[in-house]
Image 1 (cartoon, rainbow, N blue to C red):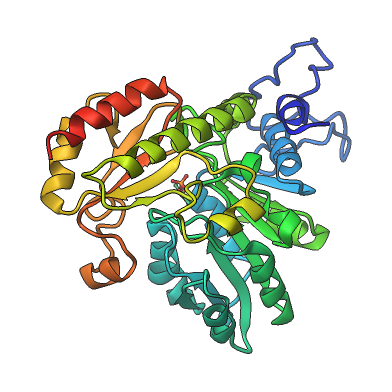
Image 2 (spheres, protein in one colour):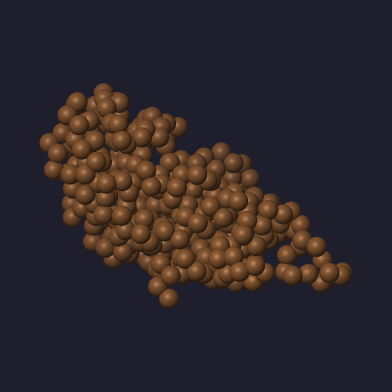
Length: 379
Ligand SMILES: *Cc1c(COP(=O)(O)O)cnc(C)c1O
Protein backbone atom coordinates (compact mmCIF):
# COMPACT_ATOMS: atom_id res chain seq x y z
CA UNK A 1 0.00 0.00 0.00
CA UNK A 2 1.01 3.61 -0.40
CA UNK A 3 2.42 5.81 2.37
CA UNK A 4 -0.81 7.70 3.10
CA UNK A 5 -2.81 4.47 3.28
CA UNK A 6 -0.25 2.93 5.64
CA UNK A 7 -0.23 6.07 7.80
CA UNK A 8 -4.00 5.80 8.28
CA UNK A 9 -4.35 2.02 8.61
CA UNK A 10 -1.24 0.15 9.77
CA UNK A 11 -1.54 -0.99 13.39
CA UNK A 12 -5.05 0.47 13.47
CA UNK A 13 -7.46 -2.28 12.54
CA UNK A 14 -10.97 -1.63 13.94
CA UNK A 15 -11.19 -2.73 17.58
CA UNK A 16 -12.23 -6.43 17.57
CA UNK A 17 -14.24 -6.09 20.80
CA UNK A 18 -16.38 -3.07 19.86
CA UNK A 19 -15.75 -2.18 16.22
CA UNK A 20 -14.35 1.23 17.21
CA UNK A 21 -12.68 2.64 14.09
CA UNK A 22 -10.05 4.40 16.19
CA UNK A 23 -7.56 2.58 18.41
CA UNK A 24 -8.76 3.14 22.00
CA UNK A 25 -6.63 4.85 24.63
CA UNK A 26 -5.88 1.85 26.84
CA UNK A 27 -5.48 3.84 30.03
CA UNK A 28 -4.53 0.89 32.20
CA UNK A 29 -1.45 -0.15 34.13
CA UNK A 30 -2.03 -3.90 34.12
CA UNK A 31 -3.90 -6.70 32.34
CA UNK A 32 -5.81 -9.52 34.02
CA UNK A 33 -4.55 -13.04 33.36
CA UNK A 34 -6.91 -15.97 32.89
CA UNK A 35 -4.64 -18.36 34.74
CA UNK A 36 -0.93 -18.59 35.49
CA UNK A 37 0.98 -17.85 32.27
CA UNK A 38 -2.21 -17.42 30.20
CA UNK A 39 -2.87 -13.90 28.94
CA UNK A 40 -3.74 -11.94 25.76
CA UNK A 41 -0.20 -10.76 25.04
CA UNK A 42 -0.21 -7.91 27.58
CA UNK A 43 0.87 -8.19 31.21
CA UNK A 44 2.06 -4.81 32.47
CA UNK A 45 1.83 -1.48 30.65
CA UNK A 46 5.51 -0.49 30.90
CA UNK A 47 6.39 -3.66 29.00
CA UNK A 48 3.66 -3.14 26.42
CA UNK A 49 0.42 -1.26 26.00
CA UNK A 50 -1.99 -1.77 23.05
CA UNK A 51 -2.20 1.94 22.14
CA UNK A 52 1.58 2.27 22.18
CA UNK A 53 1.94 -1.00 20.27
CA UNK A 54 -0.35 0.34 17.52
CA UNK A 55 1.83 3.44 17.17
CA UNK A 56 5.01 1.36 17.20
CA UNK A 57 3.75 -0.84 14.37
CA UNK A 58 2.64 2.19 12.43
CA UNK A 59 5.93 4.09 12.71
CA UNK A 60 7.95 0.99 11.83
CA UNK A 61 6.01 0.65 8.58
CA UNK A 62 6.26 4.33 7.67
CA UNK A 63 10.05 4.22 8.03
CA UNK A 64 10.21 0.99 6.04
CA UNK A 65 11.52 -0.82 9.13
CA UNK A 66 10.39 -3.96 10.95
CA UNK A 67 10.34 -2.79 14.58
CA UNK A 68 9.30 0.46 16.26
CA UNK A 69 9.65 1.53 19.88
CA UNK A 70 8.00 4.62 21.35
CA UNK A 71 9.50 6.64 24.20
CA UNK A 72 8.50 9.49 26.50
CA UNK A 73 10.41 12.08 24.45
CA UNK A 74 12.87 12.35 21.60
CA UNK A 75 15.67 12.56 24.16
CA UNK A 76 14.40 9.43 25.96
CA UNK A 77 14.49 7.60 22.59
CA UNK A 78 18.05 8.75 21.89
CA UNK A 79 19.17 7.90 25.43
CA UNK A 80 17.63 4.41 25.19
CA UNK A 81 19.34 3.83 21.84
CA UNK A 82 22.67 4.98 23.30
CA UNK A 83 22.27 2.37 26.06
CA UNK A 84 23.19 -0.18 23.38
CA UNK A 85 26.80 0.94 23.85
CA UNK A 86 29.32 0.21 26.60
CA UNK A 87 32.10 2.09 28.37
CA UNK A 88 35.08 2.27 26.01
CA UNK A 89 32.94 2.55 22.87
CA UNK A 90 33.54 5.49 20.55
CA UNK A 91 30.93 7.44 18.59
CA UNK A 92 31.46 9.61 15.52
CA UNK A 93 28.77 12.28 15.47
CA UNK A 94 27.84 15.23 13.27
CA UNK A 95 29.12 18.62 14.45
CA UNK A 96 25.70 20.23 14.08
CA UNK A 97 23.72 18.03 16.48
CA UNK A 98 20.48 19.06 18.08
CA UNK A 99 21.51 20.86 21.31
CA UNK A 100 19.81 18.36 23.62
CA UNK A 101 21.60 15.46 21.93
CA UNK A 102 24.96 17.21 22.27
CA UNK A 103 24.19 17.86 25.96
CA UNK A 104 23.26 14.19 26.51
CA UNK A 105 26.47 13.01 24.83
CA UNK A 106 28.84 15.52 26.44
CA UNK A 107 27.35 15.98 29.90
CA UNK A 108 25.90 12.55 30.63
CA UNK A 109 27.23 9.76 28.44
CA UNK A 110 30.86 10.90 28.43
CA UNK A 111 30.75 10.44 32.20
CA UNK A 112 29.65 6.83 31.68
CA UNK A 113 32.74 6.04 29.61
CA UNK A 114 31.64 6.64 26.01
CA UNK A 115 33.80 8.91 23.86
CA UNK A 116 32.70 11.16 21.02
CA UNK A 117 34.26 12.83 17.99
CA UNK A 118 32.27 15.60 16.30
CA UNK A 119 32.95 16.08 12.62
CA UNK A 120 31.50 17.69 9.53
CA UNK A 121 29.75 14.60 8.19
CA UNK A 122 28.89 16.38 4.92
CA UNK A 123 32.60 15.91 4.17
CA UNK A 124 33.09 12.16 3.74
CA UNK A 125 36.89 12.41 4.09
CA UNK A 126 36.64 13.99 7.52
CA UNK A 127 34.02 11.42 8.47
CA UNK A 128 36.33 8.60 7.35
CA UNK A 129 39.27 10.03 9.30
CA UNK A 130 37.25 10.13 12.53
CA UNK A 131 36.84 6.36 12.86
CA UNK A 132 38.86 4.61 15.57
CA UNK A 133 39.26 0.89 16.24
CA UNK A 134 36.64 1.19 19.01
CA UNK A 135 34.08 3.19 16.96
CA UNK A 136 30.70 1.46 17.28
CA UNK A 137 28.32 4.14 16.06
CA UNK A 138 28.02 6.97 13.56
CA UNK A 139 25.29 9.41 14.58
CA UNK A 140 23.96 11.97 12.14
CA UNK A 141 21.17 14.45 11.55
CA UNK A 142 20.36 15.40 7.98
CA UNK A 143 19.44 18.13 7.25
CA UNK A 144 21.08 19.76 10.25
CA UNK A 145 19.62 22.42 12.48
CA UNK A 146 19.55 25.34 11.70
CA UNK A 147 21.73 25.69 8.57
CA UNK A 148 20.25 22.68 6.74
CA UNK A 149 23.49 20.86 5.81
CA UNK A 150 22.99 17.47 4.22
CA UNK A 151 24.95 14.26 4.76
CA UNK A 152 24.96 11.50 2.15
CA UNK A 153 23.17 8.74 4.10
CA UNK A 154 24.18 5.89 1.77
CA UNK A 155 27.85 6.95 1.84
CA UNK A 156 27.80 7.37 5.64
CA UNK A 157 26.22 3.91 6.00
CA UNK A 158 28.85 2.20 3.89
CA UNK A 159 31.67 3.98 5.75
CA UNK A 160 30.15 2.97 9.10
CA UNK A 161 29.69 -0.63 8.00
CA UNK A 162 33.22 -0.78 6.59
CA UNK A 163 34.42 0.11 10.12
CA UNK A 164 31.99 -2.36 11.77
CA UNK A 165 29.93 0.45 13.25
CA UNK A 166 26.20 1.16 13.06
CA UNK A 167 24.66 4.23 11.45
CA UNK A 168 21.92 6.05 13.35
CA UNK A 169 19.99 8.90 11.68
CA UNK A 170 17.81 11.40 13.52
CA UNK A 171 15.06 11.85 10.91
CA UNK A 172 13.00 14.39 12.86
CA UNK A 173 13.38 17.25 10.34
CA UNK A 174 12.19 15.33 7.28
CA UNK A 175 9.80 12.71 8.68
CA UNK A 176 9.51 9.40 6.80
CA UNK A 177 7.30 11.11 4.24
CA UNK A 178 10.31 12.83 2.68
CA UNK A 179 13.26 10.69 3.79
CA UNK A 180 13.63 7.04 4.76
CA UNK A 181 17.18 6.45 6.04
CA UNK A 182 16.82 2.65 6.42
CA UNK A 183 16.38 2.39 2.63
CA UNK A 184 19.82 4.02 2.24
CA UNK A 185 21.51 1.56 4.60
CA UNK A 186 21.07 3.21 8.00
CA UNK A 187 20.62 0.76 10.89
CA UNK A 188 18.65 2.94 13.30
CA UNK A 189 16.20 5.81 12.78
CA UNK A 190 15.32 8.19 15.60
CA UNK A 191 12.47 10.65 15.94
CA UNK A 192 11.27 13.33 18.21
CA UNK A 193 7.57 12.63 17.51
CA UNK A 194 7.00 15.98 19.24
CA UNK A 195 7.66 17.59 15.84
CA UNK A 196 6.21 16.57 12.45
CA UNK A 197 4.89 13.10 13.40
CA UNK A 198 2.56 14.49 16.04
CA UNK A 199 2.38 17.71 14.06
CA UNK A 200 0.02 19.67 16.30
CA UNK A 201 2.35 20.94 19.04
CA UNK A 202 0.36 19.19 21.75
CA UNK A 203 2.60 16.39 22.98
CA UNK A 204 6.18 15.30 23.61
CA UNK A 205 7.40 11.89 22.46
CA UNK A 206 10.10 9.93 20.68
CA UNK A 207 10.69 6.78 18.67
CA UNK A 208 13.38 4.38 17.51
CA UNK A 209 12.91 2.26 14.37
CA UNK A 210 15.12 -0.64 13.25
CA UNK A 211 14.92 -3.67 10.97
CA UNK A 212 17.43 -5.98 12.61
CA UNK A 213 15.77 -8.49 14.98
CA UNK A 214 18.65 -8.73 17.46
CA UNK A 215 18.92 -4.95 17.69
CA UNK A 216 15.15 -4.71 18.21
CA UNK A 217 15.25 -7.30 20.98
CA UNK A 218 18.01 -5.41 22.79
CA UNK A 219 16.12 -2.10 22.42
CA UNK A 220 12.93 -3.72 23.68
CA UNK A 221 14.85 -4.94 26.72
CA UNK A 222 16.21 -1.42 27.34
CA UNK A 223 12.76 0.14 26.85
CA UNK A 224 11.26 -2.16 29.48
CA UNK A 225 14.26 -2.13 31.83
CA UNK A 226 14.82 1.65 31.87
CA UNK A 227 11.12 2.39 31.42
CA UNK A 228 10.97 5.75 29.61
CA UNK A 229 7.88 4.67 27.65
CA UNK A 230 5.33 6.83 25.86
CA UNK A 231 1.99 6.86 27.69
CA UNK A 232 -1.24 5.70 26.03
CA UNK A 233 -2.76 9.19 25.71
CA UNK A 234 0.38 10.57 24.07
CA UNK A 235 0.68 7.51 21.84
CA UNK A 236 -2.88 8.13 20.70
CA UNK A 237 -2.14 11.79 19.90
CA UNK A 238 0.79 10.76 17.70
CA UNK A 239 -1.35 8.10 15.97
CA UNK A 240 -3.94 10.77 15.29
CA UNK A 241 -1.31 13.20 14.01
CA UNK A 242 0.31 10.65 11.72
CA UNK A 243 -2.97 10.06 9.85
CA UNK A 244 -2.53 13.46 8.18
CA UNK A 245 1.27 13.33 7.84
CA UNK A 246 1.18 13.07 4.03
CA UNK A 247 -1.08 16.06 3.45
CA UNK A 248 0.66 18.12 6.11
CA UNK A 249 4.15 17.41 4.75
CA UNK A 250 3.11 18.24 1.20
CA UNK A 251 1.81 21.60 2.40
CA UNK A 252 4.85 22.26 4.65
CA UNK A 253 6.98 21.62 1.57
CA UNK A 254 4.93 23.85 -0.71
CA UNK A 255 4.86 26.68 1.84
CA UNK A 256 8.54 26.16 2.73
CA UNK A 257 9.52 26.49 -0.91
CA UNK A 258 7.39 29.61 -1.41
CA UNK A 259 8.76 31.30 1.74
CA UNK A 260 12.35 30.34 0.81
CA UNK A 261 11.92 31.78 -2.70
CA UNK A 262 10.39 34.97 -1.31
CA UNK A 263 13.27 35.42 1.16
CA UNK A 264 15.91 34.62 -1.48
CA UNK A 265 14.52 37.46 -3.66
CA UNK A 266 14.29 39.97 -0.80
CA UNK A 267 17.00 42.68 -0.88
CA UNK A 268 17.37 42.73 2.94
CA UNK A 269 17.99 38.98 3.23
CA UNK A 270 21.62 37.96 2.80
CA UNK A 271 21.43 34.19 2.56
CA UNK A 272 18.70 31.54 2.74
CA UNK A 273 19.41 27.98 3.92
CA UNK A 274 16.80 25.70 2.34
CA UNK A 275 17.70 22.47 0.51
CA UNK A 276 14.95 23.04 -2.06
CA UNK A 277 16.69 26.12 -3.49
CA UNK A 278 19.02 25.36 -6.44
CA UNK A 279 21.54 27.67 -4.71
CA UNK A 280 21.80 25.28 -1.73
CA UNK A 281 25.29 23.74 -1.98
CA UNK A 282 23.84 20.22 -1.65
CA UNK A 283 20.67 20.64 -3.65
CA UNK A 284 21.55 17.67 -5.91
CA UNK A 285 22.24 15.36 -2.95
CA UNK A 286 18.99 16.54 -1.34
CA UNK A 287 17.09 15.54 -4.49
CA UNK A 288 18.80 12.15 -4.45
CA UNK A 289 17.86 11.11 -0.91
CA UNK A 290 14.79 13.22 -0.10
CA UNK A 291 11.48 13.29 -1.96
CA UNK A 292 10.71 16.82 -0.73
CA UNK A 293 12.47 19.56 1.21
CA UNK A 294 10.11 20.14 4.12
CA UNK A 295 9.25 23.26 6.05
CA UNK A 296 12.47 24.13 7.89
CA UNK A 297 14.67 27.00 6.75
CA UNK A 298 16.93 29.70 8.11
CA UNK A 299 18.15 33.00 6.75
CA UNK A 300 20.60 35.79 7.46
CA UNK A 301 19.38 39.23 8.50
CA UNK A 302 22.91 40.63 8.88
CA UNK A 303 23.00 41.49 12.60
CA UNK A 304 21.57 40.75 16.04
CA UNK A 305 19.82 44.14 15.90
CA UNK A 306 18.09 43.21 12.62
CA UNK A 307 17.09 39.78 13.92
CA UNK A 308 15.61 41.36 17.08
CA UNK A 309 13.66 43.90 15.07
CA UNK A 310 12.29 41.26 12.71
CA UNK A 311 11.24 38.92 15.53
CA UNK A 312 9.49 41.78 17.29
CA UNK A 313 7.65 42.87 14.14
CA UNK A 314 6.15 39.53 13.05
CA UNK A 315 2.49 39.03 13.97
CA UNK A 316 1.45 35.71 12.48
CA UNK A 317 4.74 33.83 12.98
CA UNK A 318 5.07 32.99 16.69
CA UNK A 319 8.40 33.45 18.45
CA UNK A 320 9.06 30.02 19.98
CA UNK A 321 11.41 27.05 20.05
CA UNK A 322 10.31 23.70 18.58
CA UNK A 323 9.13 22.95 15.05
CA UNK A 324 6.99 20.71 12.91
CA UNK A 325 3.54 21.88 14.01
CA UNK A 326 0.81 23.21 11.73
CA UNK A 327 1.50 26.77 12.94
CA UNK A 328 4.53 28.76 11.85
CA UNK A 329 7.21 29.26 14.49
CA UNK A 330 10.12 31.66 14.19
CA UNK A 331 13.22 31.63 16.38
CA UNK A 332 16.70 33.02 16.91
CA UNK A 333 19.15 30.08 17.14
CA UNK A 334 22.09 32.06 18.61
CA UNK A 335 20.15 33.10 21.73
CA UNK A 336 17.51 30.36 21.89
CA UNK A 337 18.22 26.78 20.70
CA UNK A 338 22.01 27.25 20.49
CA UNK A 339 22.59 29.62 23.41
CA UNK A 340 24.68 26.99 25.23
CA UNK A 341 27.11 26.63 22.28
CA UNK A 342 30.22 28.79 22.92
CA UNK A 343 30.25 31.91 20.63
CA UNK A 344 33.37 30.78 18.72
CA UNK A 345 31.84 27.39 17.96
CA UNK A 346 28.60 29.08 16.94
CA UNK A 347 30.41 31.25 14.41
CA UNK A 348 32.34 28.26 13.07
CA UNK A 349 29.05 26.39 12.60
CA UNK A 350 27.49 29.30 10.72
CA UNK A 351 25.06 30.17 13.52
CA UNK A 352 25.54 33.91 13.28
CA UNK A 353 23.88 36.53 15.48
CA UNK A 354 21.72 37.58 12.52
CA UNK A 355 20.45 34.10 11.70
CA UNK A 356 16.69 33.52 11.99
CA UNK A 357 15.04 30.09 11.74
CA UNK A 358 11.49 29.40 10.58
CA UNK A 359 9.43 26.25 10.94
CA UNK A 360 7.02 27.06 8.12
CA UNK A 361 3.50 25.94 9.03
CA UNK A 362 0.54 25.16 6.82
CA UNK A 363 -1.33 28.45 7.06
CA UNK A 364 -2.17 30.27 3.79
CA UNK A 365 1.26 31.02 2.44
CA UNK A 366 0.24 34.50 1.21
CA UNK A 367 -0.43 35.43 4.84
CA UNK A 368 2.98 34.14 5.95
CA UNK A 369 4.77 36.03 3.19
CA UNK A 370 2.82 39.23 3.95
CA UNK A 371 3.80 38.91 7.63
CA UNK A 372 7.50 38.48 6.75
CA UNK A 373 7.37 41.26 4.17
CA UNK A 374 5.93 43.66 6.74
CA UNK A 375 8.53 42.62 9.34
CA UNK A 376 11.46 42.87 6.90
CA UNK A 377 10.37 46.41 6.04
CA UNK A 378 11.31 47.35 9.64
CA UNK A 379 15.01 46.52 9.10
C1 LIG B 1 13.32 18.18 19.32
C2 LIG B 1 14.41 17.33 18.79
C3 LIG B 1 14.95 16.30 19.56
C4 LIG B 1 14.54 16.04 21.00
O1 LIG B 1 13.22 15.65 21.09
P1 LIG B 1 12.27 15.93 22.39
O2 LIG B 1 10.99 15.32 21.98
O3 LIG B 1 12.23 17.42 22.57
O4 LIG B 1 12.91 15.26 23.55
C5 LIG B 1 15.92 15.50 18.98
N1 LIG B 1 16.35 15.73 17.72
C6 LIG B 1 15.85 16.71 16.96
C7 LIG B 1 16.37 16.91 15.57
C8 LIG B 1 14.87 17.55 17.46
O5 LIG B 1 14.39 18.54 16.70
